[in-house]
Image 1: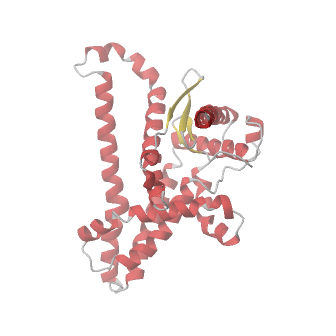
Image 2: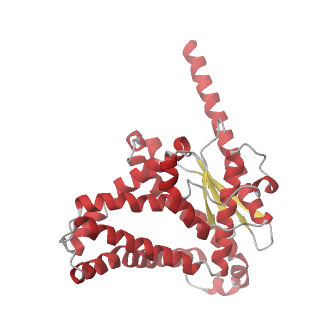
Image 3: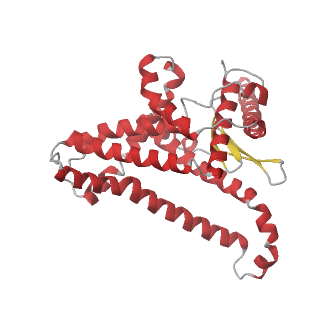
Length: 327
């Protein structure tokens, strides 16, 4: 476990994205049953602006950068997954006034915009609306803590029902299998085992540093912030004006707590704290087959090799600087 790099990942369509401190790699199983890999540097803003490495701020930055990389990884996997359809329709596309690239960007933008609007309404606006109605009906309108915890619990229930409902879809089942493959691959690396499907199969699909654990931690932290800063009598618009910027400290603190998992993972209180997140992974991860494990391990090997080459170059640069200074 010593000198291990901190790696994380994400399941994508028929593949897995793995990320280290400086690089990310995406491995996808093509329709031809081959593994295609792309990789790129992370280029974190924290390298340019040192203050972004400070606690709390680094957590919010990590969230934004993870989302950005996640979208890129998903976009790549979608292109590979739809490769055959594009080839079939090549002649039709050539006759179109708009190029395939332009059409793809427009469609992606509209889909992301629609997804954002739906997520905002269902997970942010609707729970506040329902809680205001309930508070008048059951007379807890002036109880700050009860009002805010009701909002958070409703969001949690909506999120749980949504994930549970889509888990029955065949495509989502495969996505969750790749999620399990991602966790098993990371466990194999963290435990110093050779990165083979046979070794990866032995590990569990439940990982304490998964994004699902992060989500549950943010729910708990948000209850504290909301109870202190958001009185029930605020109208919905004013509440959202205050609530949305609170994402920064909530995400930042949640990130810091999650990072503690590497240091106090065996602490009984910490285990209880992250238990709901692990339990939720019973839905969001499934046991992968060997072919899926090979994809996850390919992404992991690639990002580790990139990181290894990068660290070698940095070491050589530093050695050269020291040599020049001595002269």
